[in-house]
Image 1 (cartoon, helix red, strand yellow):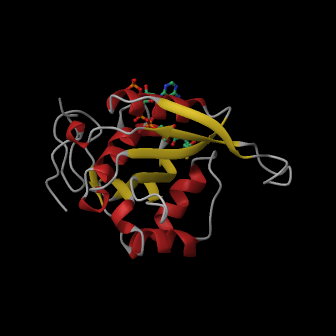
Image 2 (cartoon, helix red, strand yellow; image 1 turned 45 degrees about the vertical axis):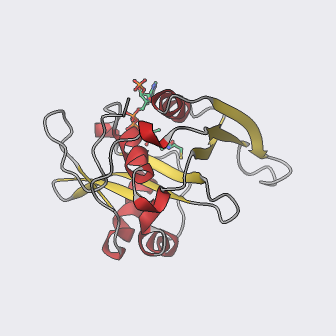
Image 3 (tube, helix red, strand yellow; image 1 turned 120 degrees about the vertical axis):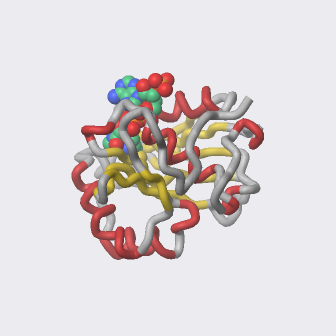
Length: 186
Ligand SMILES: CC(C)(COP(=O)(O)OP(=O)(O)OC[C@H]1O[C@@H](n2cnc3c(N)ncnc32)[C@H](O)[C@@H]1OP(=O)(O)O)[C@@H](O)C(=O)NCCC(=O)NCCS
């Protein structure tokens, strides 16, 4: 069985929202920063950081565009010491398009790219109270026919000096790459 999900640069047809999912470019950095800021949940980084994501890390980042406006974003990378793992740094969708499968499609679209050919595990960190994020990663585990494990990773007092809630490491996999949609664009 394969997941029915559009590829990284495919135009989706039919079901709303009609969006294009693609690799980011340097021109997208400021709009990505704004989308993250508007999420009201995520920490913003510097625009410079978003520009690096949109350039050096564009092969493992994706954005969703609707009529020229960025409505979804996932940043991530393959940790140097874990070549079988895609680590999701941040994922967010604009409030008006939430609950329509867009965040899941963004992550799956990155997993189908050639940059992720060796990837069979998905990781991220989530704070305890971020219910939509837990729902997203549980749904991803189910989509990938895999299980989700969790453990405290960056802790409030020992790592964040009390300034941020504990981030729990979420690990999904190993999953079979044959379950992913067939890649149409590298
Ligand atoms: C978390 C977030 C990215 C989810 O985006 P989304 O586009 O709504 O997610 P999807 O539509 O792909 O949902 C995937 C699954 O999660 C579930 N889900 C998403 N939001 C949910 C919510 N608020 N409550 C319950 N379930 C939810 C969906 O029902 C779906 O599961 P299903 O396929 O079994 O029905 C979005 O809420 C967001 O941008 N939040 C602010 C930023 C953030 O907290 N990011 C995560 C930390 S990096």
